[in-house]
Length: 330
Image (cartoon, rainbow, N blue to C red):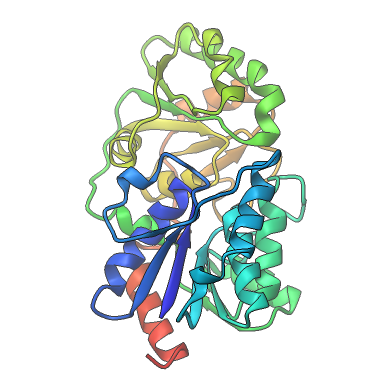
C-alpha cells in the first residue's frame, strides 16, 4: 500500500492526476497533513486527516505532529510525497525513520540557495537524501540529482501538473495575471504592488487581475492596487481558465512557470532565483524590482514564446504508474 501525502493546494493539484491513474491499478491511501487548512473541502476522495497540534511555530507543529503519529503508517509499504513543503519533509523523514520506501514526485529542483525559496530549497534537498525513487520533471532536475550522487533510482517523467491542462485550448486576450505570495517577497510587496499598479494605470487597454493570496502579509497591502482588479482567491479550475486566456503572467510562483509555458504564455518571474531554469529566456524571465517595468514592455511587444514547453507533455501520470509497477513489483 502506497501512502500519498499532501498538505497544500499545489500539492493536491499535482497529485490529482496520479490519484486518477492509480485507481484500479495501484493500491493507495491518502493523507492530508492540513498545512493549508481550507483545502479539504475541495478533495472528493476518502482521506486520512492529520490533526496538527498547534504551537508557536506552525512549521514546527506540522513536523512534530507527523513524527508522533504512528497510525499514519499502519500497513504502508511506501510513501509518495510531492514537491518541497514542510509537509513533504516531515512525512519523508517519518517514513525514513521507519525504513519505509520514499517516492519523491517533482524531484531534483534546485536553486542552490537555502534561503531562496525558504524553506522549500532545504526541504527538497533533504528529501532527495532520503528518497528511494526520484520522479523528475526534466532532464536538468535528473542531472542535479546525479551530480549530488543520491541513492535510489532516477526517472524523468515530466510534471504531473500539466496532465490537468491537456483538455484546455488556450487563447490570448487582454488579461494580465498577477500573483505574489512568497515569504522572501513579503517585505518587498509594497514595492512590487506599486509597480503593478503603475503598469495597470499606464496600460488601460489591459485588464490586470490579481487573485490576492490570503496570507495577511499580502492582504495588508491590497490598497496599493488602485488600478488592478483585485479578487479573492479563486478555485483552481477557474484560475487555470483565466491563465489559459491571458496575455502574459507576472508572478513569484514556481508552478505558474510550468503552467504558463504549457499554454505558450510568457511569464515574468519576480524572484532572484528559480528552481525551473529550463524555460528562462524563452518562456520565463527573471526580474528584480528595478527591472520589472522595462521587462514588461519588452514582453508586451513580443508575447509569444518560441519552442515547446520544457516541463512535460501532459502524460506524466501514465508513465509514473508504469514505473512504480516495475519498481515496487506491483
